[in-house]
Image 1 (cartoon, helix red, strand yellow):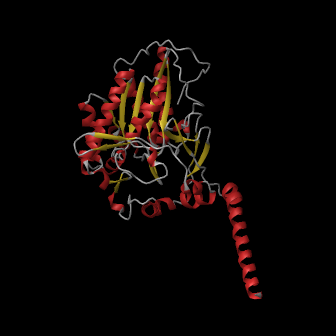
Image 2 (cartoon, helix red, strand yellow):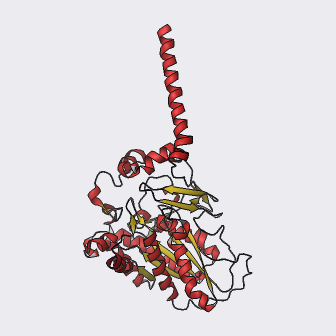
Image 3 (cartoon, one colour):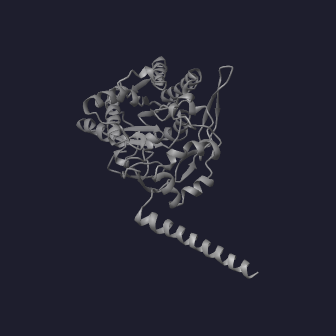
Length: 397
């Protein structure tokens, strides 16, 4: 009995020591000495998954890069405290829909391309006594199918003049594939049936789980995200935690941060993309706005100097461009934009630790989009709308 009490006391002492160390690291070390990135909690509002309104976050990258995010009252990363529903005469309203490239927590809010787009547009519009306001609607991981859902449920109420849909190479297969993740069930899916019809699977409202509880711990965020461990064990987490096999064990199959095995079914991708394009076009005609699709260039081809057609994912740009042309849709392929700038500067457009665009990439995208938008036929002068003026005097992202 005496030995049992001694062992029990030792266990209790060990437990207290470990708890004390955990509290020290959680509330002191990883808060003040080695500050770790904040977390962006998710919520579903109006059946659209987004970020918790009013959240402010700072992100620390493995290379020391620091960025700041501000989630507004509507749940989107934006310089706007909230998005005004009412329209102001003489203001061009742009809505940008997308995923993490539009949400862009890797750069400061005012350095992401929607903010750059607003500034570039206002340089030209100011000469005509006009201004632009750019509203962004984006959440990490959203595919093309979810963009359609966001357009229907969230964007249309703001009555934009132009809707920009930013496309990335993983937007297409993930529109019909069911992936396991924290909130992937909160994305609408578009499923091609054997008879040629397309079936929409509505999204579920987001509900936090174990992964969200872990992300709330500074210690977990530091070791998992900030040390780069997330990239080393992603395959294991995908397989044994989420139950999938994305990116597992075969780095040679990854191109442009996409598993090329998932984008080889061109028939399905063509059917799904064509359906979403047609639905968005119908909405643009019904609600009287210009629709512009932009797609990331294949940066690997830019850096290597090899033809884009030699890359499996590069075929997606051509496929999407062909579908857009067939439906008479505005399409901006960013390949030429990146290629021309790289030949001149020899600077890459993403971070050393992450495939998302860096500040240079965002600046180029914002400038290219501004030029394309200003060239849209019939866009200017901005139509007069009988909406009451707002008290807000500034415009931006």
